[in-house]
Length: 261
Image (cartoon, rainbow, N blue to C red):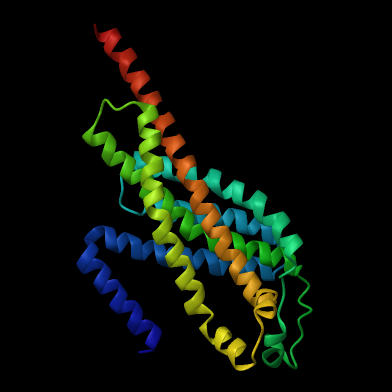
C-alpha cells in the first residue's frame, strides 16, 4: 500500500466517523473534483482552449462542492448562483491582470529541473496561468458562499419575519467574521507550499526587491490575492442574492395568504 493510498483511507475513515453521511459526501466530492481537474488537464494538453475548459470545469467543481455539502437544496442553489456570479467577476479581473503581470511559464529557479527538456508544448502559457489562477480560487469561493448562505439560512429559521434589508446586513456581518480566518488560511497555505522556495531565497541572499519580482513568488502571491479578492466579493454578492430570494419568497407567501383569505 502506497503512502497516498494509506493517507486517503485514513482521511475517509475520519470523515465518515466525524461527519457521518455528510463526511462521506464531502469525500466523494473531493474525488469527483480531482477527476474533473485531471480531465481538464488532459483536454488542455490536447490543445483545447484552456480558458473554455477552465470555465466549464470551474462550474462543475462549484456544483459538486456545493450540492454535495449536505445543506438544504434551497441554500445550495443560492450559494451556487452567488458563486457563479463571483466566478465571472474574478474571470473579468484575472484575464487582464495575468496578461499585465507576465508571470506565466517558468522562473530561473526551475532551470535545473527543466534542463534537457523542451518547453515548446504548443500551448500559450498566459492561458495556462489564467486557468491556474481561476481553478485556484474555486475552493475559497465555494467555502465562503456556503458559510454565508448557511449562516443566513439559520438566521431565517430563527427569525422568519426578518426584513430583507436586515438579512443583507447580517450577511455582511457574517462575512466580516470569515475574512480574517480566510486570510490566514491562504497566507499559511502560500508559506507552507513555498517553504523550500523561501529557503532558496534565504540561502542565496535574495534582496526583498528580487523576491517580490521573482516570477515564481509573484505568480503564487497573485493567486493568493485573487482568492482573497474573491472571498471579499463573495460577501456582498451572496448576501444580496440571499436577501432577494428571501424577499421573493415572502412576496409569494403574502399573495398566497391573501388568496386564502
